[in-house]
Amino acid sequence: MELVTPIDDRLKDLAQAFHAHGHRLFVVGGPVRDWIIGRRIKDVDLTTDATPDQIRRLVGASRPSAVYDVGARFGTIGVVYTVPDPTGGTTDVTWGVEITTFRTEQYPDGTRKPTVQFGTSLDEDLARRDFTINAIAVNLLTGELHDPCGGREDIASKVVRAVGDADARFTDDPLRLLRGVRFVCELGFTLAEPTRDAMAAGAKGLERISRERIAAEMGRILVSTRPAMGLRLATDLGLMEYIIPDVLPMRGMSQRPVHHKDVFEHTMGVVENIPAEAGLRWAALLHDIGKPPTKSVNQGAVHFFGHEEVGARMANRIMRSLNLDLALVARVTNLVRMHLRINAYEPTWTDSAVRRLIREVGDELDDLIALSRADVTSYRAEKVQAVHDRVDDFARRCRELQAAQDVARLQSPLDGDALMQLFGRGPGAWIRPVKDYLLGLVIDGELAEDDRERATELARAFLATGGSM
Image 1: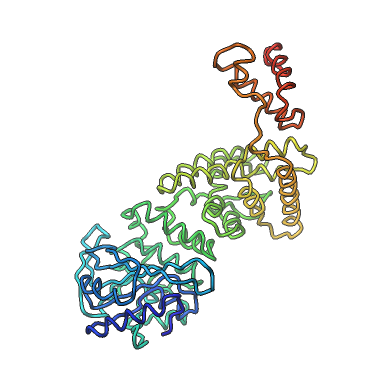
Image 2: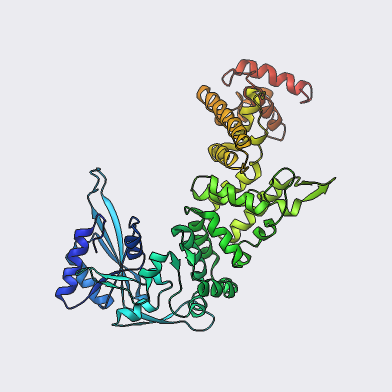
């Protein structure tokens, strides 16, 4: 086996050092799978019969920049290498490698935290792994491949199959349920029938998994090359009930006559359409989450009045329940709340109207444009093109207005201190309406942001009329 990584020479030095002291060292799991498939190797995981203490002593031969314990009870040592950029760039490349002692695992009932025992058998170590495609090892020194579970054959057949007893694999660690879905959508494979049946039967086990771990796997599914495949599979297998149960009512909910697809399939289309970035994919998944609770029917037509506001609250709750980063939660919540705004755009909008939307959207303007462009999943090419043309025209006008002035940073010519000094009044609720009035004139292009003299006249007139202008 010839790895293609910037640290190949370090790995060879490492393998020779282990061999010189009577130990074997293997590349294992994902890197081997990706090498067989022909995918770029992103991480390197190694396994060995050496103990953690021996690993610490032997890694010095490969000139690491750092060595640290990943988890003493799991027998894993982390090694960091810093090497020159192989592409000729000026920035060094940093690679992390994890080396784990052969081990066996026993899972006490009701917990996914195993009792670990170090071993000396590679086959026993491979037999504890989740799927056959990840239970393959290659001797780093000789290139010999070890595949006792038939992983290479499953890779050739594009099948994800649990190692050994599928029910036991998922009972031991239910997070493997989501890992299985992720491998399907990342690799474009299918599930072996016994594995699929065991995943469906074991879905309730996800209740034992922390929300953070579930969110992490969901994030990987969402940014994969086939996110809709993963989301459909998670729903079909009953996993979604324990991940985001609010998704389930979307399936089969008609949107006719406006949309021929149900809410779920429309959502899958939007997720596929939008760029593979976490925030955008989360927003695509949740943008219509408020439709089921707002559905109404009037004279045979289906309506979802206010679903964007309801959906924003639901998206916020869902993402917080998954303990996702609060900045990400706020960003997605805002996108869900505003996802219909650009769709209402018409070329007849004034520059003032466009400026107001730019300010209202804030930092999510580019994201909202991307979501609006993705939010058309019609089979009719002319309808798709019409929506894209409208969004493109809106984006063009935003660029032109932003080039002329930083719309998002427009301010009233008179701040609170200036207004208090001008009118000889202290702080209070009277200030906000005056500032908003002056800012509105700036946004409308009727008042220059630096025209304090005219702003003073307008402020006096505004208060003289009781703030009714």
